[in-house]
Length: 307
Image 1: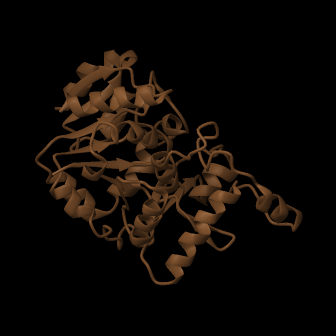
Image 2: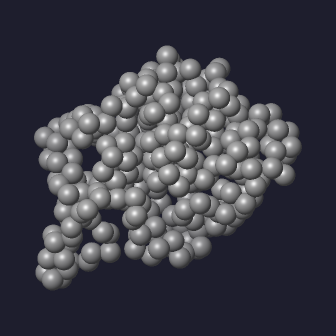
């Protein structure tokens, strides 16, 4: 038995740093999004897995919200002088992790095996598993244009209006080893406060994972990433609105309709409580802002107590 968390990037990492202090780390399995994985300079980069890994290792650059604290950018500066595009910012220490990941992948290891090795090397005790070892890439449609996720998210800074989202490879992707088994044996599943469309939907697009969650008989607790109609970080509110979903805590609960048994919302969204409960979901309202480790621990305790 244990806890399974579905996780995107920054918002998830903030909750998880509290959760590992509430739940024994060896009882926590994190299923990470790989839809935004990308190859740059020939290196395999897994941004959401890395943010979680760096956060739980205590080395994340909290000011930037990504990368390694105290990192330098000498390699990137040299690449710029050599005429390479450097819109995707990778620090020197961060680069070393991508080099190691790519080397292990080329040596024949699967992404889930590589992630396990990297976590062990960095001292991360919780189990972090990519949702799939297969190719799965989030694609953004903006009118008649189709963008790779990182082009939309980083290079173009989410400026494009999102008219559609699809997940390349989802029809063939299988859950990574250990994912389904972790869900089946869990006491509860937590859907972290990540972008529902761009971070959690890629995980749910893998049919074997979706089916396992739909058959899950124990609590599934979600945490809203939208507070007062606005995303705490990133374009979740704009993306949901542009795709026809209500940009609110209720809209997030409706997006997960059929999966959630419990939902944690911010106290400022109290007026959404009754509407969410009409979906058959129990609601807990609290302060969901995580500005400090203490905030993360407090919210993690609330999430665990919600069910």
